[in-house]
Structure formats: structure tokens, C-alpha cells
Length: 160
Image (cartoon, rainbow, N blue to C red; front, top):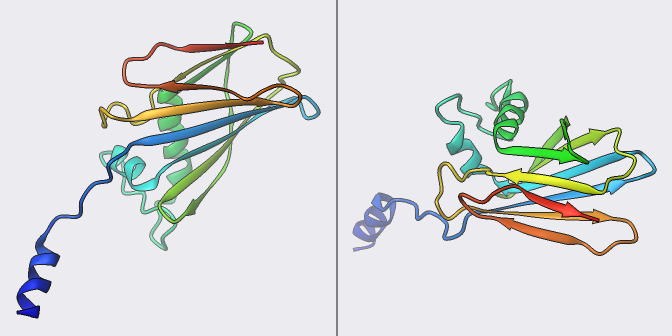
């Protein structure tokens, strides 16, 4: 009987998780004149999104040698930032994996101050209809501002 139960358990597909969420925190640092971005997402969802490009195998001995650049290219397709009416680009800083959470670090340089920051975030929404992307904007001395992007959402402008 135990053998039959074990065989049934092994034959069942792994259940997908019930929520699809990424959290992007953007911190403005006037001292370094940067926007520091920390983006948390589910690692296997991103690996699935890039499966047609390469097997990333993140944080394993067989991690794809271009995993960072592939992730960064994917992010450029799905994240757009406009500071004071000018589109800005970021520098890839790095990534780390904690359990099934992937943390990616990006940085925009040369941002003294801003009156507006427009964000468009469609990460994983091409794959998962339920995907929600939360963006938090933090700046010293100001309350945290947040916005949630759902599929089909327009860019959102954080205005100070």
C-alpha cells in the first residue's frame, strides 16, 4: 500500500503557486545621485519566461554563463523608467537567490533629484495573466509611495 501511495505522489505534477508577484523597490539616494533598484521575483517564473532563450539554472553549478545578461535583457523589455521626462537606463549590479526568491539589483546613475518618475512594469505579464508587479518608491524624508501594475496597465508617474 505504501508503495502505491508513494508512486501516486511521485506521478502527480507539482502544483503551481497560487500567486504571481514581483516587488520592485526604487530608492533615491541624493548623496550618491542614484536610483538603487531591488527587484524580488519568483526565480522559477523568470526561468520559465526565458526557457525559449536558455536554461538559466540559477544558483546551481550549471548556471548559464550569461544568466546575468539574459536577465538584464529581459528586464529591459519589461521595465521602463523616465525621470523628469527623460528615459533612463540602469547598470546591472548583481543578483542573489534566497530559497525560491530571486533578488536582482540595478542602479541608475546621475539622478540628483526628480519631480517625476514614470514607471512601466510588465514583468512576467506575458506569461501569467494573474501577475502583479508592485513598485515602491522611497526617498529620504518622504513617505513611501507605491503602485501595483496589473496586465494591461499604463505607465504610472510618481510625482513629488
